[in-house]
Amino acid sequence: MIRNLWMSVVLLPTLSFASPGAQEPLTGAPSDAPVALESPPTDVPAEAQAETPPEQAPPAEAVTPPAPERPALSFAEAKEQYELRHIGFDDYVAMQMNPWTMSAPRTVARWTLPYEGKYKKPLEGKAFYEKLGRADLVEAYNSNMRTKTLIGVAGGGVLVGGALVIFGVFDSKREDCDAFSPDFSACMDRNSDRFDSRMGNMLLGSALGAAGAGMMVYAVWRNPHPVDTSKARELADAYNKQLQSELGISDEPAPRPRKRPSVIQASVTPTVGRNGGGLLLNAVF
Image 1 (cartoon, rainbow, N blue to C red):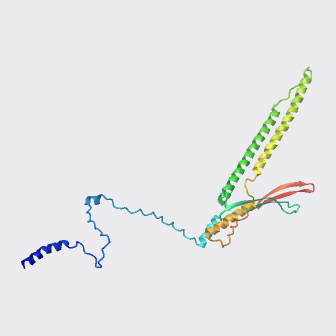
Image 2: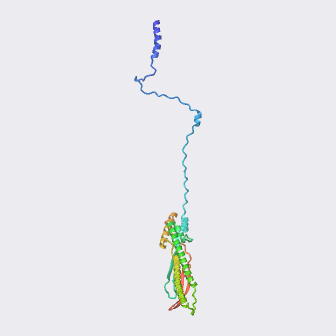
Image 3: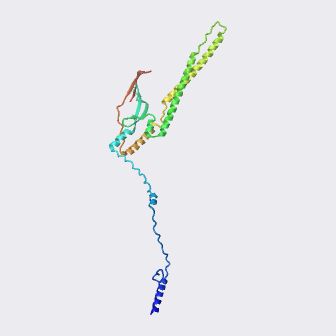
């Protein structure tokens, strides 16, 4: 009895030491899955957290506000704008009529002047092309004006030079020759040569004066416009159509320019012919 009790006391601790440290799976097969070890949480000091700058969000893109829409014009306002800004033309005709011969009037000259708006603001010179927005035509007009001015100035210089030559002819005096002097024959020869020289200078001065006057007249009548009248009307028509489209009145007919009272200029000139005399009436209207 005592022997059995002692053996049980000795064997129990031995069996407890031989017991496995980990449980096996229920299937009896050894487990190959790795055991994940969890690291203990690390405490970050408060000072380190204070020193770490917070993450900044990217700046938002600036949004440009949309431009305010231009209020639409009413039809009356659009028509008023068109009447103030459209391009028109005034035609002038100079006619000559002889009441004594009862002949038909004869057209002497025609010209056209462009204007802007119903108040007919004149578009003279390059102002017409500037209104159209054609820089090339403005430059062409300026170039033609420079040429016209140069021709006029050159003609004036030639005219003055011819006048100086003619005045030099009258400045030369004739030598008085004594008929009883032995140098009479030589004196007459000198006067003859001087007369020939004066006549040559007179002709030269007259030719220079005529050439200078012709150049000045040509400069006055030279047309500096780079386009003719029909082309100018075509350009103005295209401008008016674009203006109508911008104002939204493309379907409406163009307003007629306001009529203004005609101005008649008349002059009477006496005439004399083989069959009698009379008066010549010149009228511009």
